[in-house]
Amino acid sequence: MEKEQNSAAARMIETAGPLFADQPFDAVSTRQIAKAAGVNLSAISYHFENKEGLYRAIFEKIIEDLKPIRVGFGLYLSGKMQAAGDDRQALAEIVIKFVNDLLDSVMSPDNPRWRMRLIIREMQAPTDCFDLVLEGHINVMHDLLGMLVAKILREPESSPSVKLTTHSILIMCLQYALNESLVTARLGWEKMGSAEIDIIKSSLTKMVLRALDLGEYMPDMRVR
Image (cartoon, rainbow, N blue to C red; front, side, top):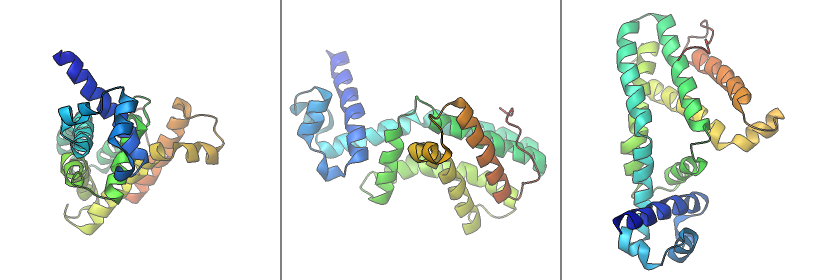
């Protein structure tokens, strides 16, 4: 019985997520969610108290699912930055790996695109969940990358230049997954496969290196 209840709750989260990503919160009804998830209307209040509770549970699930990315990058960065010291080539290689790994993550078929659309919607029209996603994921990734950017630019982590450069790098990486249809149309690609993603990696890596005044270091796509 408990397994069935957990399954129903998970199904509502996975069903309601895309609905909230593509429509304003008030436009999505509990009846619509229940029908799409194949559950009784009362199931929403049983598991989440109300629609707001379900909405929050979706963000909690997203943040939990993204935990391996935060932890993995944090562990990698702590070791590599110390070893790199002031070696610009070594710092460039850290940047290259970050850009490649982040693009692999956001462009992966296993990464539901609706999650990024929902986070963007929340940033554009904040609710009580804004602080949740900000503190749970966005700030963590910004602060980790910000340490690297600050070291490369030789500026304090708190400086506007470091924060804005960090933000720009993250947005550049994420926008390819958010605008996949536009990118493929503009490039004349039939699909977004591994070969196309490799082209994006190469181009984006060079742009990021130039932005960090590391343009003299050519991307080594074999860095992992």
